[in-house]
Length: 196
Image 1 (tube, one colour):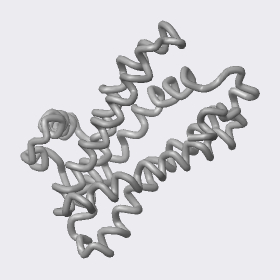
Image 2 (image 1 turned 60 degrees about the vertical axis):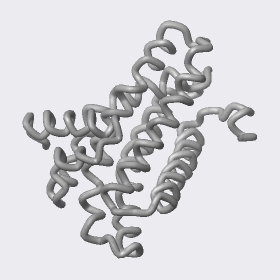
Image 3 (image 1 turned 180 degrees about the vertical axis):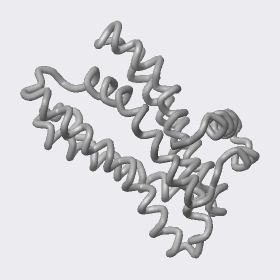
């Protein structure tokens, strides 16, 4: 589990990362043990993720218990899938030494994502039909994907197109996993989501 000092340093690193400052790397423990400790963040962020998914799920939900079970399985898989892919691609890109060092900042960046998504979450909580949420979600998504690309480019010493390809892979994996969770959770997929 990360210590208070590691948490404080990581938050400083996240502020630099949010400004696209390459100095963010100095604030993360990029060793294999630092990468493993960063997975502990999944536990405190889980309730926020579940609340977000619950508020955004189409109604009515046939089985709330099944919904939450599927969400938890999908959440755990989401935390593990892309870091494992990073390790495999690190070898393919001859960056096996840097790949574990990219996992810790990548995982800590989830904290930044939660912070940036809080306004939309509050808006949905007060008004589920808020027209404010869609555009805000899109802006936050684009900003977070840009941050992720910058993070991967710096950590793995990639060319821009390689970082963009990795971000695209992460997005596709997230979409596929999200659809699978909806199916497993017995949640009807809105017709607009099917056509997109």
